[in-house]
Length: 403
Image 1 (cartoon, helix red, strand yellow):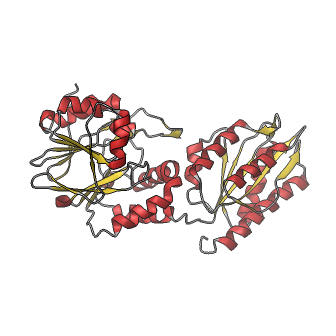
Image 2 (tube, rainbow, N blue to C red):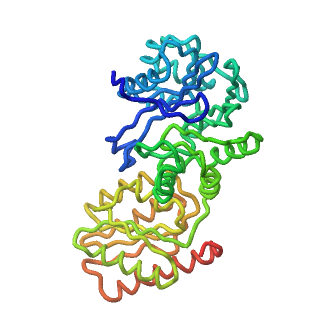
């Protein structure tokens, strides 16, 4: 065990004892370009309590950080806010080392952990229940589907500290533990990317959970998520962003996603972009040869329009477009305007299939799918610019305050 690893103080008698994963680059298909952290927290009280554990390969790192504060065998309670494996993967090993008196989870968490670890005895806590740690009080609040059925958060009254589980987190490996130690541009980028790729399809339950927590009257001085930095200065700023995202507030921005074989669809995408910009819309062009699906999702988070283009290959859309559209369908972005376009040689099925995918996503399409045979002619490119202009006009009509 790497005993040189140490805990970080979060508040009086509260320590971060998690793990830093500098190497991870894939999280369920989401490109974690800057790694991640698996945050766990130690609360010192008469009943010493561990909040969450870490991904299984990092168990020794967790125990080493705990050991820098207290002998792990002195831990009395373990709280599991979320049963997903990046937070509970080492729970069995930690419980064997700690031998806690009690392990707590939500009612749904108790069921999930029983299926993961049948030998482990876990007690269910009720929504709103408070646990006396001896000199400190920990309250539990269910946040179902934020982002699993078992999800809950825990609140330490004496510190005004919310252990927020996956809410308000981000995938960011960092030697710094707190938000005010990290550049705000980086925080905004990774916070948005996390919401877009993990939480966007759950916006409705997240909105309800936010209303529940904000309306509780509790004072959130520190918010400690299970991934990324701990918020001790800028949490109001985080809430402003979440308020926009749960409400799917769109801006005057369009994202063009395409791939190409012989540059014909690229030329169409560029002409569509010209039409968008000429209509007063900000345009982001994302060729899938060099873009990742999770970065597309990030760009769409606040965009008002999505336009997709593909050549036809074997009567189908290009594989990279199939990949990104399948991914986006699962994320369920709401309120988008869009259109489909593409080039073809023998058959022109791709734009029609793209339009069907957009329909599945409930994207409001401003025109029929646009096709160009072989190399786009000047008339084809003019039609592409016109398509971009139509999307820009519809964006201005639908979201007049977004400009």
